[in-house]
Length: 227
View (cartoon, one colour):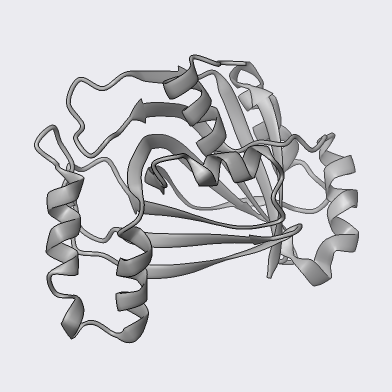
């Protein structure tokens, strides 16, 4: 299981953050290619996942459909179970069939197509379909992500910019949206490597912030709360 520490900065500091990473004595270097991350978040009709996060519930599960890239034709989406147990977390992944994500996309139709074949699926996938049957899509968000790795390969940093949120209730046409002028930096590492994580934060001048993109999006989209 791993730990994740989050830090939030105004977007005007992106250049200085990037420089600090590349000049850090922990030898962070950029890996992979910057790419767009897309998420459809799922929750109960009474927003139980959202409330659990606000209330600081220690053990919770959040479901989202994730894919990468700019294309409307989504080829390899995955369902993520983001599982939180106190300060630790891990993810389970399930592959999903592709779809076209434009104004014609209808989540109910898409999900019905998945569950129609559930008898041919593994027991794990059948359980997954059962979990999703009691949830609805509540939010879409997208952002650009850069990836960095420390010289010893034990600490990974992601840097998210251009964060956009859009209301998503199963259909995607003419939905309310808003963008965030913040950058979200995440430091990720295995639990056994906790001791040096604080030294990395100090070296980079980082102060932990409590942040959840899902909470930010729900507050803004449904409650007009942009603080």
